[in-house]
Image (cartoon, rainbow, N blue to C red):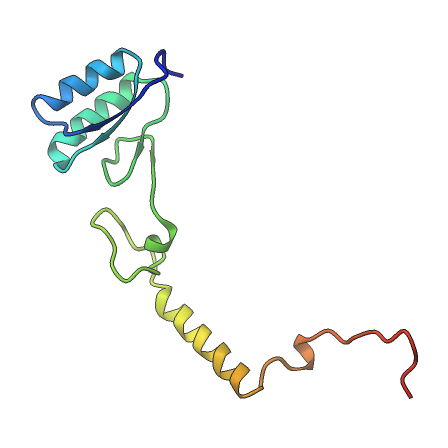
Length: 128
């Protein structure tokens, strides 16, 4: 836990921004850092990961962070476009589209549900 209760969002890890962010971290602030240039963000991410006691989590920032955030829908190929930092491990979008289309067609044609997929009502009074 940090000494200071304040959380700081920091944009830019360049020549001036990186040293300033480091000073805030050393002073005990919780700092979230955003940067567009990987070459500048990578050394700062490595240094922060080495120096602080809590885990560092990256969102496309660097493999040197202790953990990574990746949106499940992006990873599984469910979004039409994915940001640069997303690695798609599969492409489930077309598979899901096909399954939903098949389901909808069977419901419309009344082929689903069958007796195998429904519960029978239990009558309290015998039906004659």
